[in-house]
Length: 394
Image 1 (spheres, rainbow, N blue to C red):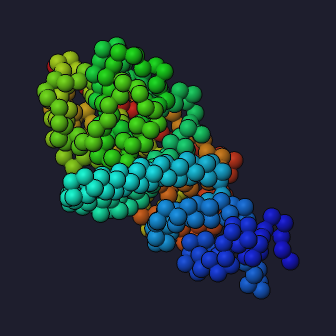
Image 2: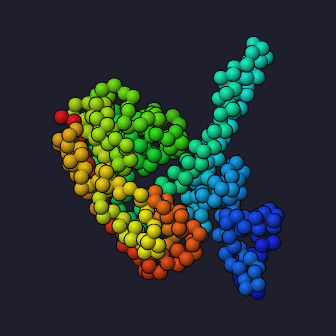
Image 3: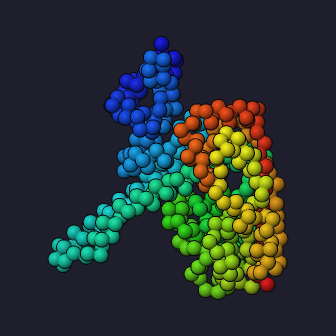
C-alpha cells in the first residue's frame, strides 16, 4: 500500500514530464534513488526527490554528463539546501548564457568577415572552437559556488555572535574615503555585497581571484555601473601592480592556500604604500573541531581536510610568518560559536569540505543523516576559532 506523500514511479515520471525508463535509469546509475522501496520491490518518490530531479534535469540540459551530475548533486531534503542550490543553478545558467553570447558574436563576426572581406579570421574561429572547453570551468565553478554557499549558510544560520563574520571583517579594514584597496581571493564578493552601503563613495576597490568564474559571480552580485569596483584575475604570488599602489590589502582565508606564502607576502608588501595595512584572516587548531570529530565518528576513514591549513598559516603561527614582512602585527579574535539544531545544513557543510568525505558519505547518505540527527539531539555546539592578523608596512 502506498504511503501518503509518496508517488509511484509512474506518477513521479508523469509529474516530471519524463519517461518511466528515465526514472529507472537514474535509479540504476545511482543518480536518483527512490525514498522508499516496498518489500515487493515497488519504488516510491517524494517531493524532495522531485526537487532533486529538477536539479538533475537542469544540469543535463546545460550539457553535463551523468558522471558530472553524480559528483555535483547529493540527496538532501533540506529547504535551505534547495534554495541555495537553485541560486547556484541560476548562476550556472547565467554563465552559460554569457558563453553562448560569445559563440553568437564569434559567428556573427566570422560571417561578416566572409561577406565583406572574403576571408576567415582563423584565430577567431579557433577561439570559438575552444569555447566548449569552458565546460570543465563551469563544472568547477558550480562546485566551488556550492561549497562556499554551504559554508556561509551554516555560519549565517546558527552563529551566536549577532554581528556576522563579514560585517566584522569589514570593521577591521577601517576603509576611509580616498583609499585604494586590493582584495586577493575575493571569491563571490560576499564581503562587499554585505557591506556595500557602508563603503565610502570615493574609494577604489580591486577584487581579484584566480578564478574567472568567481569574479563573474562577484561582478554580478555587486551589480553593473558601480565605479568603485574593479575586477582582475590574478595570483597573489605575482601581483601585476606597481610598488606602493594600495593603502590596504585584504586576504580573507587565502594565505594558507598559497604554494609559497613568503612569495605572496613579499608581493603584498611590495604593492602596499608606506603605512599601508594587510588584513588577513585565518583560524586556529580548535576551529570547527566538533564537525571533524562527528564525521570521523561515523567512519574513521573520513578526513574533512587533507591538509591542516592552520598549520600552514593559522592563529598559532601567523605572527611569526608575518614577522619578516610586517613586524607590527596584531591578532584580533572573532568571538563566536555555532549551535546547530538540525542535520541538513551541517551535512551540506561537511560535504563541502576539501577532504575525502565524498568517498564515504553519498553511498550511505540516509545512514549518515540518521547518525548526525541522533548526535545533534536538541542542538550541537561547535567551536569557532577565527580572526584576523593586521600588519602595517613600516
